[in-house]
Length: 346
Ligand code: 5AD
Ligand code: FES
Image (cartoon, rainbow, N blue to C red):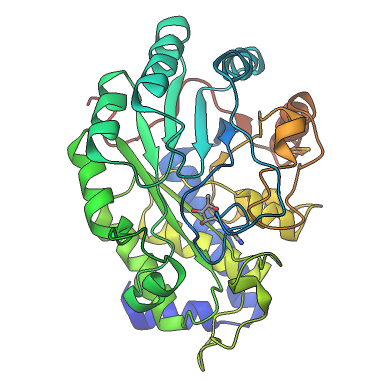
């Protein structure tokens, strides 16, 4: 598929043609990654962040939220829950928080790998190479870092530098992670103010070039306490809408371009359509969901965008809710770690 074909699909409004696309993509998903939906338990271990990305509700400029960092024993309790619920992976996510020290995190990873069969995924922003290397060495399997947009100018606009250090997830970080032997997940937001159809098509084609193991895409949801959430004048002439429908198109095209990838039906999508957004994502290309394991008192503080799905639920509620949703659409709950397909040998 070339850029023009991707753009044509992104602009497609004919319902019949879209139904054909959903069907084709669902067949492709079944053929390449099967009926299992893998569960990745998400632990939001800290909402402290030194960055001020202009879309994100936990950026350092937001003084209206309480800040937290979970204790080691609290994290390990969530890990035990993941095992009890039958999840194959835990994802530890946080802002760029240097209170999460290299050694502290190394200890936690070692304990999880020593005490459980879980795959360990980290999503801790742009850390120095020494940290990433130590965590990989300690047994972390995967790292998630979305590049958000392949339009360099737009990227720089929404990711202010940190002192002297500019933000460069696209090249340095993603390449570095691969070199260290992580399975790498990345992805984008859809409908960022200033993002054009051409940008979005380039993002989707970049997924293939980057050879990613996991690709997460979700709608941009304006957060009132951020500069990008103030109602922006940055809207492009050829602006991509941040809609539910556009999100399904991007999930579907991602599956077409990367048939073997692990593609989550994201929380941001579920937040736009709480009734059945997650299911529709799974029926239009996705094969992963990420149930939230964060304890309720912290969960409410990890509000990267408003009206986030599951913000008031418990981990038990999400566990049973999601397996029911998966079974209801005729799929099965995945067993094992559900890692990269091409490299299970690695
Ligand atoms: N709307 C949608 N997604 C967001 N993210 C952060 N802020 C927002 C927002 N306002 C996404 C980014 C980030 C991931 C953890 O959450 O893509 O990489
Ligand atoms: Fe959290 Fe449904 S997944 S309540």
